[in-house]
Image (cartoon, rainbow, N blue to C red; front, side):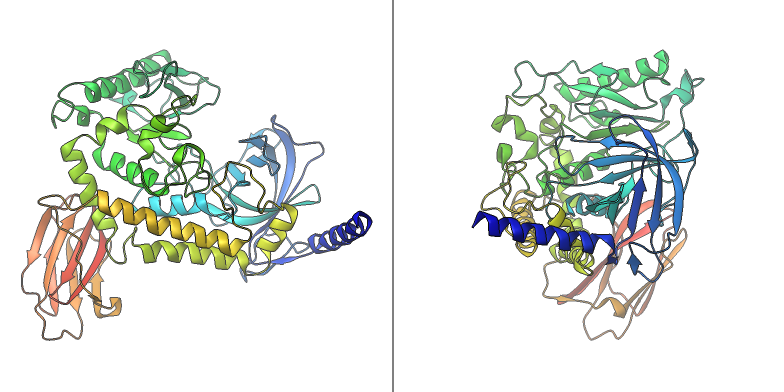
Length: 532
């Protein structure tokens, strides 16, 4: 029996090698070659990308990009499927900005293996949703990767978190910006387990015994940040923490709001709690501050252990709060700061959060279950179109193989994995709906059975800076109203009895994102509009 099994295995491997020698994919194909073994120290290599306009890519086809790179491993080195940091070079050690796979020009990139994520899409889902909320999130595109003639499977190729006009668009901070307004930004720092310089919070994490909260400099990095800049950003965060820990922390003038941007914290909490991220608030947690502005959490990074992909510390439950992580796992070396527990005890903050969540949950908006499932189904279809999934899991046969304490019973195939993912999303949203209910004075989501078809409503121009035109085509006998609402649920404009053609003068409104709602007793329509 063992002999027959060995013969079958050898035959399968031979077939797999033939398949991987030449294959066709609807995903971009990235081919990397290096003269030596890739490790944690950057080495020179070459990268070619096959990404045809037709969408049909053959592994032996003509590349649409060829260039020199620096490459090294990144992330969890214990994973069999390694991730990589890539830097595009014009010459050895000389970086050059390059637009790749339709993404804005830069020189720092990543290839993420997402080894424990059998859906191959958890990071992408989180980033897409946060971006739809109006937040920057690193752009990622699925590809198939070959390194030194070895097929390595499906990867996410995309952006690093970096200060750049096309990425995290905050001000450049130079070594000469050491006083006054010029010293107030931009900064990026993180809460993580990485190695680097930074400072320690004066506040121990809830549920902790010996654990500390350590912030690390990301931009400027340790080699470039000046002593004055270090003192400034540390003092700024210290002030935020002191205000948030004070008895009057809810005071809208003298509390934490002096230093923290409300909506940014709201959106960050919504995403971390929705995805039930095991690393939420304690690892891969970035913050930034621009010149003359308040500090904000984000961008999002690291979603492999989100969306019910580990049972550790109650993370597979569709109930409970991520910010109470220490209550289940107080012995973990990294715990969330006290910030999130205090923020969610702030009455006005929670009112604003609930209003914002309710609007995101409106039909057709970011967190509408139907819309989230569209993202999942679209990614599944693309990954499955030309056998990329099959090739990936032949290379990495991890079905029913525990890696990160996955919830049981583990999925035995891709369709079941996606079904489980969607079921979690549905249950998690249902639980959050029960907790983040409509507070007083917040315009609630319309609960009607009929939605006005989008082709019957014309809203233009979007974005706009002066006037917004709303046309309701084929109006029935119902009485329609039009309301304009900001992201906190505040009513800004109302037309009690709308006509077929309507005009809103928005020249006095601030720049930003708003919700336009058209409704009658039986129908409703909601659209997000941008004022510039």
